[in-house]
Image (cartoon, rainbow, N blue to C red; front, side, top):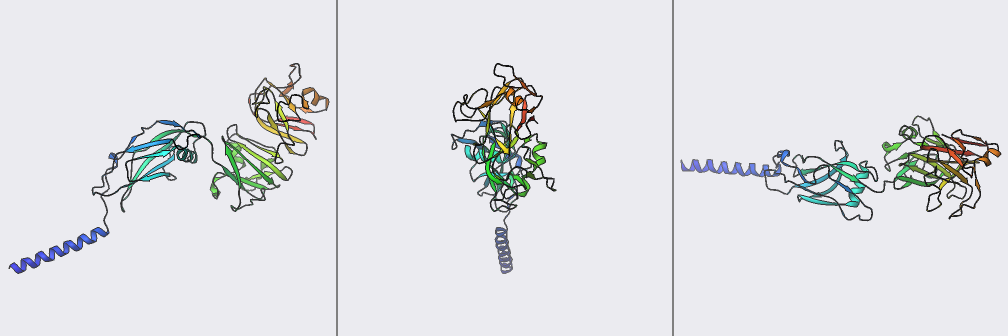
Amino acid sequence: MKKIIKSIFAITVTAFLLTSCEDEQDLRFVTPDGQSFSIITPVAGESIVLNENTPTNPGISLTWSPVDFSTPTQINYSIELAPNGSDFSDAQVLATTSNEFVTIQSAQLNFAALVAGATPFVQSPVDIRIKASVGTSDPVYSNTITYLVTPYGCLGQFAVGAGIPSAGWNWDSPLSLICDDNVLTATATLANDTFRFFTTEGDWGSGRNYPYYINDGYKVSSVLENANDGDSNFRFTGNPGVHRIKIDENQKFITVAQGNNDANSFWLVGAATPGGWSWAGNNETEFPLVKTGVYETILRLNSGETFRVWEENNGGDSWGETNRNYPYYVSQGYTISPELINGLDGDSNFRYVGATGVRRLTIDTVAKTITLN
């Protein structure tokens, strides 16, 4: 009888050991109750203003309650940031750690916030959560908090297309537009063909065509038009050659200037213009040549105020350089927009009488017209 009992015991132990080995190979931890896993600090709605002069300063410091996976083990935490109100399907991972705290530097948070759609120099909400995982168990997520970030700078963009011969319709050598305070600029040789802007290099889905900007309220240079080519790309219609491209995402306009510098430009100065009656810094407004005999710029004009056109800029106070007032153009036979009148201010400057707003001003020295659109 004792031998039988011993045999049964041995078989039971062996079966237990074999079962234990199998369980270790396919070990799955019990998924905990996610309600106890939450971000402690910061609380939702806290904010920070980021500064490009302090890139290594803390941008956000997070702490959270631990997750209990029922079995003692190391837990991996990932800090995720996503656009406000999104489902985190395109979340960025800011850091991974086995601790229950982490600090993200300002420069990293700034870049992530911009990628998530934050507006430079404007307080913008982004969503943050923590993902906990261990082994092959399904991940567990903390609560989501909305953090208010005021970022600086902006993200560069790209352009490709046959209208930019150096780029063509591929990603081998796209044109890069450098961003500074939400103003994108680039210099490129343009051909009378089509192209498109993109927010992400190599991503065709990030394209922004002509209607995208028009529907968003942008004013666009007259030498750029809707190609109506099925994709509604931009088509360049000016003189082929080197041009400077500017996308101002603050004032919402796209301009093109002929040449790789301002040697062929006129200049606007006056209270009707953004820089007022001043040549200090970059207060004067460049009024560049966009094609043969045509000068054009897009700017915010102030209603009821005056300005004058200068044909030269010596790099300093250029009051004495060649300049033109309203009577000069009348005497030359120009047809002038009714929104521009003689200022009768002693110098007979132009006076803008339209509504304050972003306008496209064009002086065509061939057709002898001055128009506002």
